[in-house]
Image (cartoon, rainbow, N blue to C red; front, side):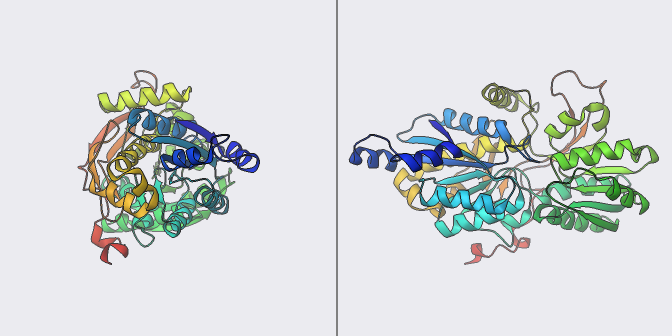
Length: 413
């Protein structure tokens, strides 16, 4: 396995043949027997903690665990800066010039939607492991794309509906103004209303670059809603929760519903601030022996102390399953058709330490259990990264939008 950053990759492309000094026939043979994974992610922005070094380490772990099975595996990494134009330019070069076969991670929903379109056009593979919009398996579904880990429908159903059942029957949303925020507000609104609740209003917050949420929080508080729903993620979520605590909003009885809360957010907030928050996740490092083992190995490769989030677990699991499908289909066939590779991934059952056994549905939705967690108090925590207590769990099929309701067009063709 080799790893290349985008800067190194571009420099090499400008100065030398892709396979260095190898004879042309040998270079072609090596290229034909090499699968390249492109990790296109957030390394420096709002979602760095839930992607970043742990995403690279998790992908590396999948490659190491897969081991040599008759072909080479290389990984390249780029920071898309949460900008669809940067992401598509990078993916286009990877697909057209750099022999990259699959793009993974993707993060921001606007990025994932754009890259999924390009992957379909180029007949490559796109796997979204830290993307939320449920449109990836709905109106924007593609036979070349798989959506792993979580989506706005699941988050809304597991966390949003639970808040209404607990008495939070009036809502006001702080919504990040891009595809992810819009989808999360839309899906949560549906579950709030279905459970007998009401939405009193919402406000759109600029993305990216907003750090001061005070005026938005005060507007939400003025609505007298029992629940302020945060349809945002990453640093935006952290800042919103911190500022809500500074204003004493929760002390006055208003609940904060962080609809997409990662363990990395809890780590950044600290238990003193985050205690009592409820969140939906599909992975927690301390669930069982398998989750503890894979988390330990990801952290060892990353060399840091950032907790392993469900997105990182998805990076490991998705890349491992992709490589298994390549081995099953054959390298030449997999490189020739991303659509055929995704079809093979769907035909094969999934099985890994992070999520256990599962499957990928026809629309590209990876099905696995979801869990409702509550953040522990400082007194309840037993040590490093011990942040969650389990409230409830689902089976693998239950939390996801039914196939017939998604509006995915290609599965009917």
